[in-house]
Image (cartoon, rainbow, N blue to C red; front, side):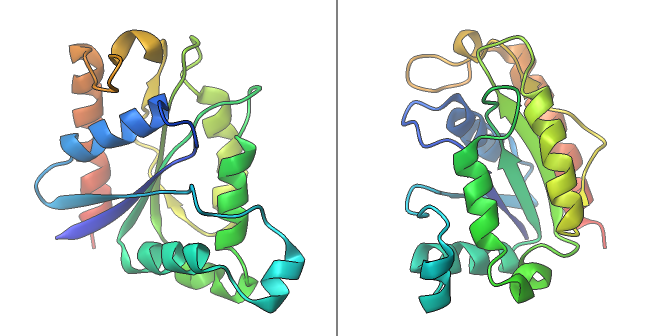
Length: 183
């Protein structure tokens, strides 16, 4: 069985992107396991800290990604771009730079996101493209999952309630699963 590590790029407890990631894990086909990773313990990047040692939460996340067959990045969109806290995580995951091939090279990656606005994180997802390209990932681009008006498709407890979005999510996860499991 293939494993995908899913990361939501928000620290907010009631994050719509964390809700979307949980819904994606539930919608994954049976040949895929989606393991949800938290970014809460990842510190702000500091070269002085790196020079002493890679923080344990960073090292553990790097090992989980390196052992997985896929990576699902669930991105919020802040000010029409990548959230700083999420970019910080990726920056840490590339340290030391000699680890980039182990963690990212040829890693099969998909992007999705949710926002309360109408844009569905399209600008944040586009902003991730050069980052993922320079890291040498294999981006799955055959499907899009951009949830607009997230406050209307998730209930107060973070459960996905919109059947149209659920259908789109199931299709997205089935497509990404095929991409991840193809030799």
